[in-house]
Image 1 (cartoon, rainbow, N blue to C red):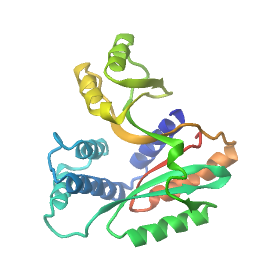
Image 2 (cartoon, rainbow, N blue to C red; image 1 turned 180 degrees about the vertical axis):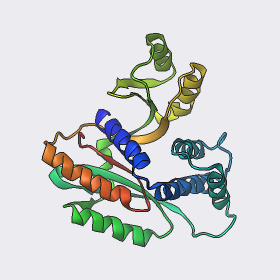
Image 3 (tube, helix red, strand yellow; image 1 turned 30 degrees about the vertical axis):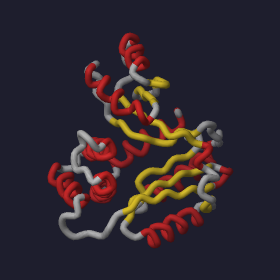
Length: 239
């Protein structure tokens, strides 16, 4: 888990400091729209995926008007092509595995662009299922604090936390997907303010790389993140 948590943090801070908010807003808007479309439910109170997407929007200071427009698009109001979720499995250099999630209104274009990015960085697509078995889908909650109290930890474990990891600048709690919403509620009850709560893929085992190899993988991750429709990238490399 630690490898992915560190990459999540790198990605989050990079997104905020690079000054590319227009592209980031576009990606998160697509997540909001498709969450509404898939469940046919525009209420975050009863649509967990929508609630998570709106939380992500707020974490990057997306204006409320943008959020409202994205919800309306998901309801089929206004112009715009149909969105769909896409998932690719791939291998990069050194046998590093990747799961790539995207939201697109043109799956052929997105497929071609992601394939091109992989080929430029010594990567290639893998058959569906050949990578995903290496990962476990979980919920994760991140706190921008170096520690939380012992009693609070015990209450979170009783509420479904499977692991509590203390990083250099934050605390990460992992849980099953079914426990994510109740654990968020428990955090609020304990007055623990979290900066991120989402579902993600955790590698069952990680690959250790040297510094040169890490940089190659980070360069590939950056290139994938720059692609307009790519939403999340998961890897089993320790970064």
